[in-house]
Amino acid sequence: MKKWLLAWGILCFSMTAHAQSESDDNNNQRDSHDYIVTLVRHGDRSPRYPLNPELWPMGPGEMTDIGFKQCYEAGKHFRRTQLQADFPSHWNPELSYHQARGLDRTIQCATTMLQAIYPDSLKTGSGNEFAAVPPVYAYPLQDDYFLGFSQICTGFKALIGELQKSPLWQKKAEEMGLDRIRFWAKQSGNKPTLHAMMGLADALHIRKLHNLPMPEFLTLRDEQQLEDLIDWFMSQMSKDRRIVQLANQHLMKAIDQRYQQYQSCLESGRTACEYFYLLSVSDGNILALMTALGSPRESNVPYTSMLTLRFSASNKTVQASLNDEPLALSCGKTCSLEQWGELVASVQSSDWSALCQLKESETHLTPDISTGTKKEK
Image (cartoon, rainbow, N blue to C red):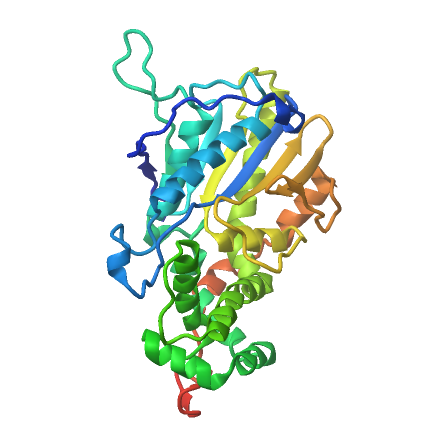
């Protein structure tokens, strides 16, 4: 279950390998006794379910050249705004720890960011044949309970199925038009459900970002409704208490443990303590954590969005920000470490495994929009 994959990569396109500090942003740089935890969404990617696969030679759900560049710029921004001006440009194991969801795009984004955070790590010193490449750790896809809950937990799909039966979700489907959902499903080869329509909505959203023409079978109103569905679906999903627990029980505990290790390191009098913890994740990870922190979001987060927690060892406080904008958490804009501990405890439960393995009951039937009959999912 707890096998690790050690993943690293080298940028396959040409870009400047030196990321310089910019004095204009020095006001945002960390205090010497701050510990930084940042979750970053990966960069631009191809559709997970492309309508025209020939347009995406990298394959479904893979980062594009634009995405690699976005992640590199995100790394430069992170170094400039979150780290001290004299932060080392060569990586060593005492400086930081890096994890990613077990997907190509998240691993690649983390690796690309680290090349900007540690701009000299690919340079070899005199007499050294090999560079010290910062490692990125990821669970295998089939074992990624840490960040990949939506993929490995049957309970996630069961909970989404249950949400789709709720009055709120049924009302949303009616507002969009049951006939239109049936039509979109037929044209795209998907099931006529809001969850299934997310694949089509995702493909359309990415075509729009890349200035590609929309499919002829869609009206302008169709396009707008499907675009709006992304924000609505992600917001509603990430607000469900059980999904929030699935997403955050292990994640928040790991964040807390790394800060506790940092605090113990300081108290021991050591001069070299880990500065930051970088996690490359998907949008759902960030949205669910924001809900757990008491700051739910009504829209999705853009590519390379960064949710940052800043732990102050000197003030014994925690602050959070999304893309450098301060967040008000359930305990305020500045929370005590005790309040942080309460947030961590709020998502801990002994029934996580049971929730992850939850399966839809045989008697829990779903209305089939296409026919109006009852049908098992």
